Image (cartoon, rainbow, N blue to C red; front, side):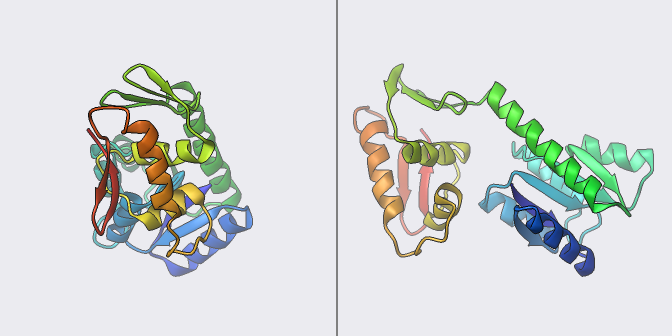
Amino acid sequence: MKLLIVEDEPNLLSILRKGFAENNNDVSVALDGKTALEMIHNYTFDVVVLDVMLPDVNGIEICRRLRASKNFVPVLLLTALGTSENIVTGLNAGADDYLVKPFKFGELDARVNALNRRANQDIDRVDVITIGDLEINGRAKTVKRDGEQIILTAKEFKLLYYLAKNSGRIVSRDQILDNVWDINFDMNTNVVDVYITYLRKKIDKPFKTKLIHTMKGLGYVIQP
């Protein structure tokens, strides 16, 4: 899993980071709400572990902003406030689960794994993205445009799917490398541009309306 841990207490953050990393997760961290929002906006995570009491933007407000922007990444709230009222507030703000401090890491790990499984099951049930006349089925790994089937390689599909999940949002080459290739490529490589060209030949060239756009100096965006 790709995890984001948002916690302003350094000792606890270190423990959580180490524990999740030892379980073979890709762990990113943020110490405050503003940084967390920027990271969630710029990168894709499977689960966010989010402390409620944070500098500048608290965990409840982060949940509200994510759901308002149609970002449904699973969120588990960590809270020192274990009253029913506080828990209800967090869940109503958009959190998927909560854990009251202090807690055992094993329980947190199990809950995070459960959220990830549930999210993947939801994707398997319904995962069709529509952009104009383009239809991408994430479960069947199929692509149609104007009703016509388009055959893509596995990497072409993964790139298109990532762009589509971020429809209307500019994604940089570095973000694409991190989320599609998922390895430390030489950032000077032109592999992203090459695969964008491949996609355009199949997705855009045969059709009147172009969907994949280059934003000079910034990256790429897919939108009608």
